[in-house]
Structure formats: structure tokens, C-alpha cells
Image (cartoon, rainbow, N blue to C red; front, side, top):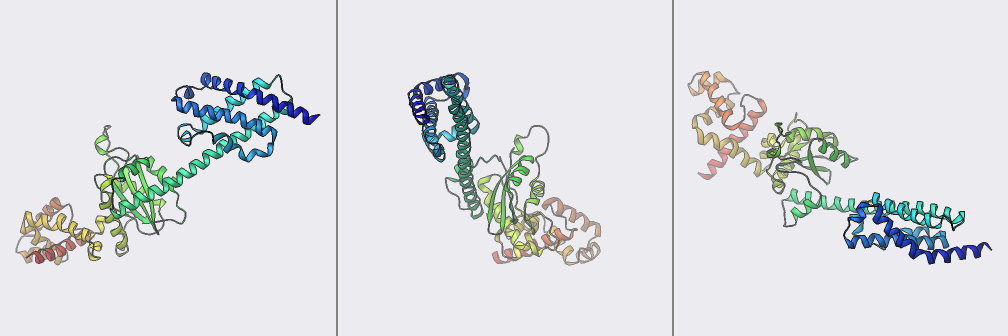
Length: 392
């Protein structure tokens, strides 16, 4: 008797499924604005999902052990693109409307077992929907991670192609204008989400890559300096790097120089990588340290970029401005940064030496009276004179 009642219920449900599908589509159109606003093709795909849900319920009522196939039965009816246009919240709204229509139609004509089955099935289909979206999100996350690693690797190697801008856009890069590259040691447990949250709080965006034991961050401001209209100064990259520092492992942390755009980030990356390789030679290096503050160590290690930077930023400007300034700097550094000893060697008053040192600082931005900057300046004089002697 019970089996016959179930068979009769199944037959009744099968004859009713078309009516339920039509009523569901009408209810969707009446109650869900996002469904009404969809293009016809996507509305049709959503309708297929609703119809598949009703058909699958009938099959499931016949054989509840078919639960594992719910996701493929229902969501397999829609194209893959539907996952990108319909959110999980909207999918759950779709399920709720469908279940409401079915419940209202069978309320008067069905027994309690069928009503309980509808409730159980709606729970299973909701979990199945969540699983589908979770798998899609996981796949998307893995794809994004691989794409991000590819972009960072292209930046580090400087091997760009025409597809790089589209790859960057696909990652949702929000940076505008200048960028800088930060290199340090990767922690044992890398918290990518925390790094991104910190960057967002600083009005910045980051591309993250792990190269062996190194963690590389390409940093960009969400607003370019020329876009800031409220009078505040853009946050310096060194300050942004200091806030991101806890996300790195122990060891040195080096920030490359600022470059105008993301497609030029390879220059900042090369400087940061070269600085990171020699940072241990600077006994009291700060964390983070600027790659340009490591110019002496980088030049000693054979970095051509560091050598050209020292020549173009220090040696040539002084040489072109005044030979007296270049001679004074040489003498001042050779005499242990003593004003009196330098004045005696040059046969000038100590105030003259003091004035020339001030002019040097104004021209090149380095103060020869500081120990670290004196090392940078002396390195510039050495590599500059070597380069000049080769050309002559």
C-alpha cells in the first residue's frame, strides 16, 4: 500500500512538474529584480536551473540516495559563465523561490512525507549550491595565484610581452601611477590575505610573488599623486613598506626605488634584488632599507645599475658643476671628514670647505658629514674616476 502511494505521488509530481516550472519562472520575474534585468540568454539559463531543480527533486524523491548527484543534475544545466554572472546569494534566492512555489502547490494535495521531503531536498540543494560556488572560488583562486606569480616573475626578469597589461587587469590591480618593489625573506606561514588587508588600509595595492625563499611585493598606490585632491601628501613607499614589514620572515628587507608605472617595475625590482643580495654587508641596515642606500655594497658586488646610478647621481653632477666641489669632496673624505685638515690641504679657510660641502648637499642630495652618506659619496668618486679614466 505504501509503495503504491509513493508511486502515485511520483506520477502526480511528474504531471505537475511542467506547471511548477512555469509558475516558478513567473514568480522569479515578479519577485527578483536581478532576474528581470538579465539579458534573455542568461534568463533562459537561470530558468533551466529552476526547471532542473524541480525535475531533480522528483528523481530524488524516487531515490533519496541520489543526493551526491544533485549539483551535477541541477547546475550542470546552466553554462559555466552563469557562475560569473549570478552570485551565491542570488542562487539561494532562486532556490527559495522555487521551493516556495512547490510548497504552495503541493500543500493541499500532499501528505506530510512529501512536505518533509521538500524541506530536506531544499537543504541539500542549498548545500550543493554552496559547494559549487566554493569549488569555483577555489579554482579561481588557484588560477589567480598562478597568474599573479607569472606577472611578478615577468616583472623580476624584465621579460615583458604584449599580454602583460591584460594579465595585470585580470588580477584586478588597483594601483595607479608610481610603483616600488619590496624584497625580503618569505615567512614559514605566508598570510597573503593579511598583506592585502594592510595594503588596502594604506590606500595601496600589491602583487605578491614567492621566489624560492624570497617574498616579493610590487606596491602601487590606489590613487596616483596627481589624483589626490584633498591636500594630503601621498604616503611614501618607505612608510608603506614599513607597515607591510610584519608580513615578511626574519632577515633583511629592501625597497627598490620608485618608478613611474607598473610596466617599468623591472628597474625597481632589479635594484631591490641586488640590494637584498648584499644587505648583510651593511651591519646596521634598517628594516626596510632603501636599495639606493645600498649603492656602495651593490657596486662592490658588480651591480652595473648601482655603478651607473652613483656616476650619474653624484660624480657627473659635481664634475659638471665645479671641479672645486669635486676636489673638496675628495679631500674632505680622504682627511677623515675633518674641516681643518681639508682646509689646510686645499689652502682655503674652513668656512670655505663648509660652504662647499653645503653646495654639494644641495646639488646631489647627500650630506658628506654623515658616515653612511660619506661611504656612498666615496664609492661614487671611486667608480666615477675609474669610468672617467677608461674613457680617456
